[in-house]
Image (cartoon, rainbow, N blue to C red; front, side, top):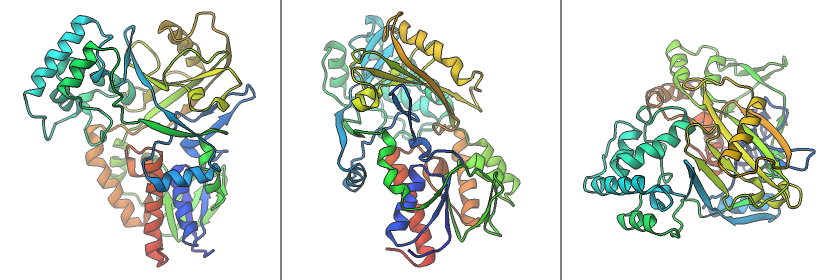
Length: 441
């Protein structure tokens, strides 16, 4: 292995993507993570109760054969290949996903108004350059559906109103049905599956982190190393434990609002821009049950504003090895943000409200036998694509380019990245470093 003194900050999907790519080029690296465990957002936690929960819901639905093969090889071909069934809960109605093509179970008046608005919207061209996300939603779906469904869910998930969000993040995430699909979905209970995730993979054993463990052997990994200062001129990284490391090249997946204040010499205008970047904070409440027959869904979206959780996922649907035999599990996501919805509870204080709301929506019984509960705080969950981001992000990225800090991953690029996209982001960062040292393969 060639030693080029390359330091990677963060042991999540993007950091390990960088390490893997460097290793493939015969170049060694050193990796540092603030946590006592590796994996970042792709970490998995195994409990004495026999239940296994990831750090938020993770599945692999990459269509890239290279990534599919790479992950499959990492688990020795031992993975589950599953069909995703997704549904929604809207004020007592269970609605197949996506709701815009499955209005059947909604109240008649609401269903009728959604259809009439959709017909009117279809007579107009979709706004090419919408001022915000809400304008786009109304242009595509009509006002009734837009304001009762995606705008409400978006506020729960992103913590900000739809008219304060941009549209750069959407990609395939919001399905645009034809008129035929809307009408048929309102009349018939059974409809074709049109969700953007049709099938996915998940490791049979050990949770999602199993996909990443072999990557950790391709770098010199150091845990319990929280960065407190970076000097891009001296090319040093200082850690909270008193260790200072030098580097020739630095790859970082640290969230940009946290990273910039730590970098010596960061100008005021760059600091102010980084401070405008927002992301959600998530508390995941994990519940283990003595049965596995309480839902047909792989995950569920919750629209009601008075329900504490935004989305539910069911790890036992990913692999039966995530819980004791015959048992089931629920992971509830509750979203906050420093900028728009400050966190005002501790993780454990949300356990009982989550259980109460699971009873309220009819997913579990009042006297349900609960075998496991825990709650975890995820300080950085999802990027908020508010209007500030579009102006602030280029300022931050341009300055990091100038001082030679390579930013990767969801929180380095500050984008809406799924797991395979984050891995590829790390590979791109590594490729840039290899070009600089003349070792590109």
